[in-house]
Length: 68
Image (tube, one colour):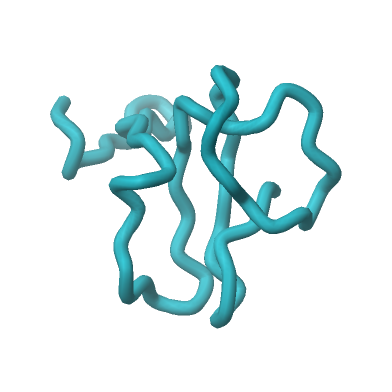
């Protein structure tokens, strides 16, 4: 698996990890990603920023990337 692929096996999804800086600049509303440089203890639905060292799921809400 590389940075642009994901796979589904036995009901699980393996998703490539990216950094905040490499998230798409023009994402699709509802797009999801896993970042490797997220905040240590973000609040659910908080706007994402870089600078941490934690793996976190994020999604795009049509205006911002958010934790969740």
